[in-house]
Amino acid sequence: MDATAIRLMLSARRAAISPESLGFERGDPRGRKSPGLSQAHMDQLLCRAPGTYGRLERGVLDNPAPEYLRDVAVLLRFTEPEWVAFYGFVHGEQPPFPLDRDPGVALGHSWTHVVECFAEAAYVCDYAGNILTYNAAFSSLFPGRRVPANTFWWILFSEDARERVLVDWETSWAPVIVPELRAAVARKPDSPTLQTLKERCLADPRTRDLYHGGLPIGHSHPDGDVRPVCHPEHGRGWITMCVSTPLSSPGALLFVVRFRAGERPPSPRPPVQPATDRDPAGFLPPPPAEPAVCC
Image (tube, rainbow, N blue to C red):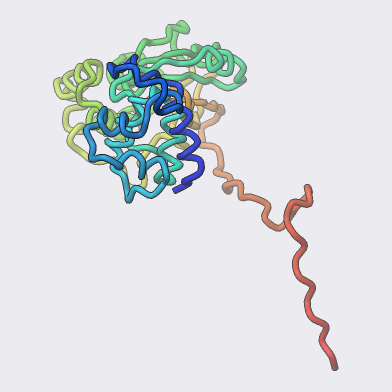
């Protein structure tokens, strides 16, 4: 727990909120001089015992629950990045849920520009597979460059995907994508899009049985997956998927899809490791000199 960061962050946000805006009467001008909400106001608004919020702000509240921290963040009008930072200061990890439980994914304009700059195929979708933005190289993966609205739907139910573009659909694609859909439904059971995809999946004889199966051994996400395709413009080959998350858009996923032509998949390369034995900037202290050995 970073007590100093917590105190500075919370006290600054309290000071920016007028008590009158939340229904408190204007105080006696001869009394408390500090601007904004008091710690006592916070306990009243959060329905907590007196002193609870004060212990949180001082960094001495023992293991505060994620739900309580979220209530504090909402009351103090944190943005999503501020919520992530605040939770990290308290618990040293990512929050278990976004500040807005069902925010609908909004993608910043800068990400649209970044996606257009990729030479490889790239796109951003939300948690339900709805495509938010993509580049020209990504559109070339689809016959006629007709980009679908939803990646789950196209991969699982489009005849172009099943019969023409996604090679070995029955063994290389469906057994992985269907369980990924099931996992997405478990994370967002109230999503109408995911529920519609689930119903379609259970009604389709080619995907029904896969829905109740598990992920292939060793697979937990699509990042790093290599799968066979027949590119509409470049022929047979393989795509490698690299997946990351734009931090300012919770629920969004950035996919970079690298295509390489050929009958065989590209050879895997070893992961890049930090060069701990080099220090070109002179940041690390020099190692201690070895003691001289006397004969």
